[in-house]
Image (cartoon, rainbow, N blue to C red; front, side, top):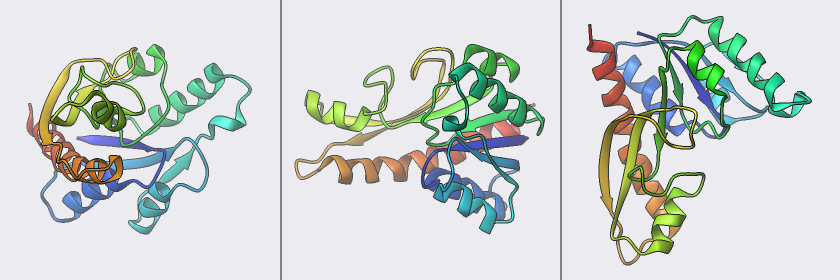
Length: 188
């Protein structure tokens, strides 16, 4: 299975995928890693791993539609079977998703459909739930909507801060992303 991974930040989920591929635990080809802005550690990690990288800088385009068209064209140039949003903090258009036949995989640090959006961890804590977690799903035109593929719960401890809880969720999220990709890659 050929994938393109999109990042906006440090790329810790991406690193888990890179490590699993190198260890022979994940049978995917990472065709390229792309970012929406310059200077992301995710792109730096990818370069260090010998992967092709690209940036389609959101701020370099006068409109969201023009950026989305450029991103779509660049990702499509790698002919991926699946596009992986790995902490990619931009909403893509329905046309982007349709270009890849709906195979746009996203991770989210909450048990969707609860607590969608950019602040899932903070929102879960503010609401007072005792259990949150992470979700891997096929993204659609909504925000953190689309068919859920896998979820795993994480108990919120009394001593948790937003940061400590998010770090514990990220550990589960990395494992869940790799196992989901392995399942998808093994499917006929």
